[in-house]
Image 1 (tube, rainbow, N blue to C red):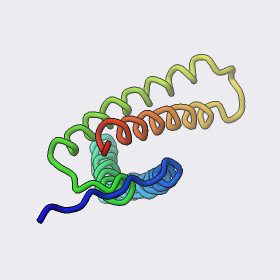
Image 2 (tube, one colour):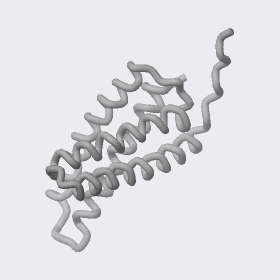
Image 3 (spheres, one colour):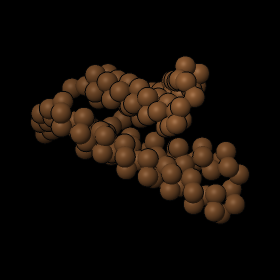
Image 4 (cartoon, rainbow, N blue to C red):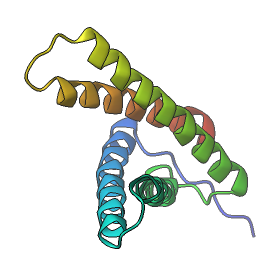
Length: 134
């Protein structure tokens, strides 16, 4: 017997869940990073492993809770490729913002917020409309 299709959640519900999951994944990323640093791991390897832990956490939770998908290898590969692309976009946007912002108090935070917001929007739109579309 085939499973019945699941009704797609409203945009506002998916967006809220996506943001909540992103916050939790950021805690996993940062926590892993700090733990690995405390264990004496090389800083760049610790950051890379933290990023992988956070990204994997976001994929697993978003796949089921936000986008209500069973998941597949193709979806996993697509999300990982998307995260790779948006990582580059985020780093690039951060650099652009730092170049164009005047030297003000909080310029690094402002650049970070714009870069993170840009990457988050791209991630959500592509996951909702391409990777996890119904």
